[in-house]
Length: 320
Image (cartoon, rainbow, N blue to C red; front, side, top):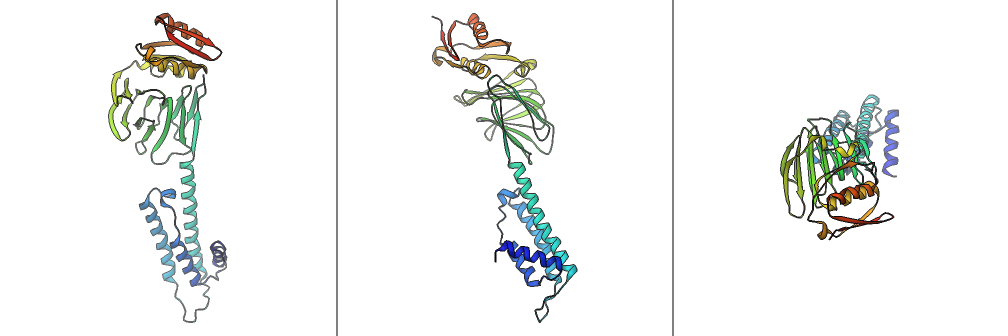
């Protein structure tokens, strides 16, 4: 007989008051033999052991109360079996609750903003995230003890304060830890630099597990992957998340960042020679309502560049 069938049979006997002490002992031994996968269902090993200990204590209490008769005959201890049934129900209900909790906190959702798009996401703790064009956010359906999301691209965060559950943004290079604040993270894998800019409140920035610095309002941290170094500077608070209100806003950016910004905004592909374009830094502030040609015209009126455009392919060169 399968264990599932035997358990169902014992439950039926519990309901009718005809279950034997031997059957209850078998149920106890079966429970002890189960691998409850602590790493998946419970918070940690200690949490699993505590719950198992509590449940087994209740079962032992029921077994200790049962006096085995010398004849080994069935003893219809109706009330005691109902108490045992309640213990079994507790075991089963706790397992179902733990699995449901595990499934909710480990169900990951993905939000993406396509070319020329912005997307707003409301997280389960009522925190809000705005994704810039080309950005991607991975986040749980329901947060656990630590509120963690993964970001590729640029996002602006408004985090609900919760002193007992810190909020973390993980990127390829940097991790940002906060309790309740608003800040911008720019973390495109194809760019050398990752930026964290604080609008309100305070955040801690780490490179993997190594703390780099603590930022407050108007602070910006720029981390270079190639140099393995970071720089901290001050920025204009009003310009921190201008992109969320329909602006293209870049400050002292390399052309690689300019090109990526235009590709994400307009769905084009820009070809250029990095060594040819690396000597300039670009500061650009204009409406996203402009066409890509109009934006390139603005850039070429300030810097010695020229471009050729065919369909969605754009080639940019430095003027001689």
